[in-house]
Amino acid sequence: MLFSMRLPVVGLGAVFVGVCILAAVQLGDPVYFALAALGGLVTLLRLAIFLAYARASPPNDLQSLRRWERRYALGNYASAALLALLNVAVLTVHYPLLHLITVSLVFSFGAGVVARTSVRPKVCVISLLIATVPTAAALAVHAVATHSDALHAEMFLVEAALVAMITGLSLQTVAHLHRSAVEHHTARHDFARLAKFDPLTGLANRLLLREKFAASLMTATRTGHLLAVHFLDLDGFKAVNDRYGHPVGDALLQQVAARLGAMVRAEDTVARLGGDEFVIVQTGLLHEDEAKILALRIIRQLSLAYRVADNDVHVSVSVGIALAPGQGIELERLLACADAALYRAKAGGKARAILCTADDAAQVNVAA
Image (tube, rainbow, N blue to C red; front, side, top):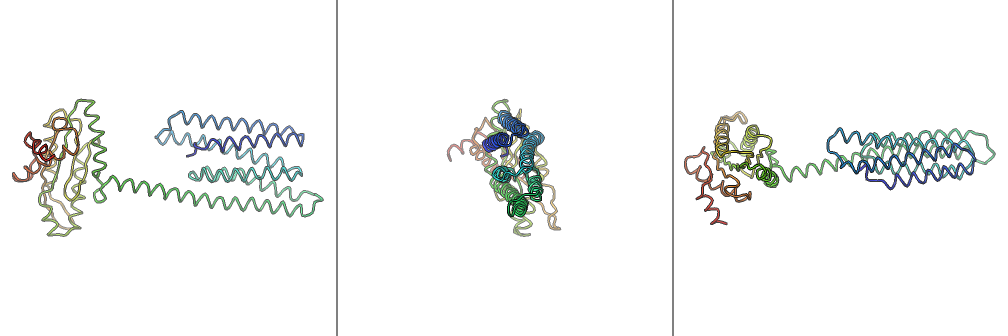
């Protein structure tokens, strides 16, 4: 966002240089030529930073982003300081029209800074104060200079107060815009999380499961490894709900999710499809026995007692396993195949892990 506004920076820089040259010609003071040269140099350097950022393929790591932000901030501070110097220099002479132009430049800079950089309030506030405080002070000093114009002192004092007042209002606007931006991004983050994560357990939901599966399948295809889809269903969960109530059932599901998350690797995916159904996508397998080993560990760990609301609760789990690419490469097909194996596991006595067979795959084909 900071580096997306090249035109205002170039435009303000060009106007600044033009005003400095005009002042130099009208007042015959080489100081303004020096300010024009500095203004042009700062504008070119800021533009070079913008272009370098675009070429750098904006980084995602925090340290690099902070370095770029510091570069942007230094450019902003330099522009603000030059505006302040111009106003201090111009306000040493009595040239009302030139005063009007240079003070207007400060207002334009302030409005642009608030609009563009309120997402970074520190940069924004420092830039505003660098530009406006010296300007307001120079106006106040000019007010006390001896001059024959009627209401000379009063009008310059009013203008100094106006600059100070607008600065204060701008600071309040920065606070409001920053707060609004934080709330907006927080809401976006929360909505994105709700869209992809199960609200009860914090595990991936079906949407995120599809995304993770697609990425895992690409890796498996590239490396030649197997990928296992484990379909889990708790044994005895309905009895827990009926006996203790849904709050205890929800708390039990949360503990189950925590145990599952502790048993898999970072590259694996644990998802909750709904109710007491869970799915694990296990990646990087060299042999199907690795899937069986994980499934047996899951059965052992999930069958241990749970302490929920001062109650000792017991459930077990049955697991159906489908392997890619042998039994398909589409998630829904693999889930259906694993579900068929899960059905056989439950029918055979529960707390069992069964691999999808050719017959299970054939049933899936018939159903499809």
